[in-house]
Length: 131
Image 1 (cartoon, rainbow, N blue to C red):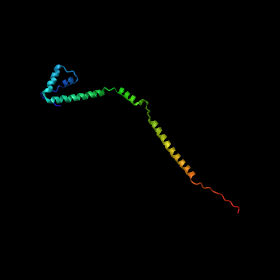
Image 2: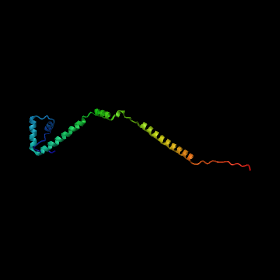
Image 3: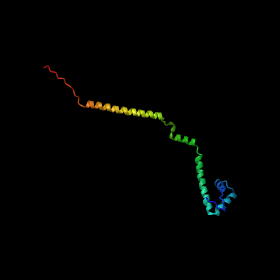
Image 4: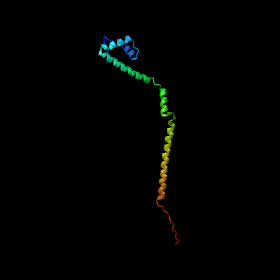
């Protein structure tokens, strides 16, 4: 935004206009400033759009985080969720390791037992003679 040497940008009037606090004399001054030069309307429109963006930022800044967080907790039912600590996770990993090792041993024992019973059994016969 550049300033004319003849016309100073009336930011105070912009603020009062956008806040709906402009009196009749100030309104006439602002309107005459806007009509004086087409660039003034561009400057005012830029200021107005920035003002509107600031209203959005104010809305975000005024959010009650505790209230919104409690709404979110109610929505997601987070209080009834189970939280697992690091120690419990380590115990869980140990249990899974134990079960994996136990499963391997069971498979080996069952395989050995199956092979033992499936393969033909060799028996020894004793033959004795008296001569």
